[in-house]
Length: 207
Image 1 (cartoon, rainbow, N blue to C red):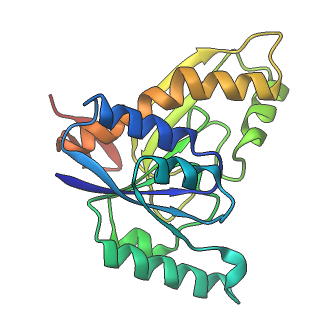
Image 2 (image 1 turned 135 degrees about the horizontal axis):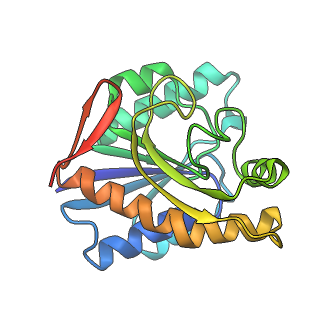
């Protein structure tokens, strides 16, 4: 059974999707052993506790420097020793030391079709940029994490149409419900079943 740690900062909607998928056996050979939040007020903590999942808060404001914060996060991750780390709306940058130690064991979900609208934009800003540009399709991407933002090997992507009546908020809501909550659990399941291989910064799904 693969041990999964989920890193969160906010509402925890993707965490909830993962828990639901595990309960419905749509994620096989995987269980969430720990949820780490960068925000002590994150709703995701209540979701985890409701499902009797261990939680831990590591708040950036409690550390004098970014380096001290990352060192504590690294220490706690090594203590838990997960097979997979999932960034589910985690609003802190992961240090190179963490990425290197857990190479090809950290995945992130980004609310756009990478390589579009990524890197320095996140959250609602992504959807604002999509609407400003006037693109016709958007979506989300699950990818492995490397030392560059939104640059690691892509696991899964899914698209939806942008409506003329969309606001950033309605688009964000639809991307979450129609895309993120589907491809993140599916990607985690593929990882837990050892069906993902990586070569030349590209992923291959092994059936």
